[in-house]
Image 1 (cartoon, rainbow, N blue to C red):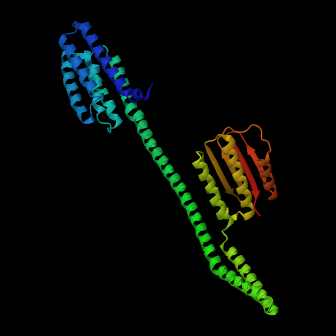
Image 2: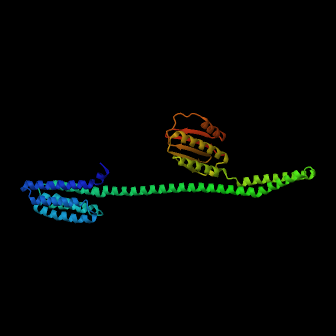
Length: 377
């Protein structure tokens, strides 16, 4: 059953019931004295009005329902008890125009069965009761379920939109942070260049001038030349100390550089058509420079292998900082690998992991995963 037919199932069943009850009334009328042309036309008009009622806008439905009731009055008048079931059906159809009414109203038409004086009294009562249960089931069970399902679908769609919005926001923040870190590095580099120029340039220029003077005085005044050379040595030594101090002050933290490099790695893979995402959990500031070096080198090696051999569409780099351990995993959704051969790349990864007392593992059930488990010192 396709989706369109399923959505109109209740309407189709009601139309079938209406046609069956109309035919039943015509057969009863035929058994008594034959069916007149007038009855046939009235029944046709009734079926037409009640059928059109299902396809018109809600505000116009009541007009066609009123037309159907008017025609039914003539049908019952001329056909008497032959169309009594069609009359009860019409009452239930009118009740469907008011979806908010209490379900007890659907049992009210059953009281009308006591005015039925036909020999088929019991069968009529059972039929009407079944119709009441049928309408109640749809209007309170099925419709309620459909309403809840629609609300759940709306909530699900909203959640998906929220998740997509949060994902977009997170990626935007990561990109902004990466750009900010790069800008900071560029600013620090420019500041370093300016500082070296300001503090070291004059020092070196002065030393050059003094050495030029030494070259002139070396033969005529060796003692003065010797003192000038010592002054140049002292000046250059002071300059070297200043360089060390500047570099210690300006050198960015390994963590900042590592994060920028990982984000650049993801961006590079994304530009090549493989969606790559970096995720971190826990306090990554606890990871020292030595561990960052191992994590970076192995991550680059693992991602490079995925890009070369895995034929994957997604790569995930995840770093999780636990109590005394840090776990780094690189996962792709590619073709996987049945046998792992320790080439230069994997051997290098194992060697780096051993230097920090960690372990290296591989999984290839769905795609391929490289997992590093390293103790924090």
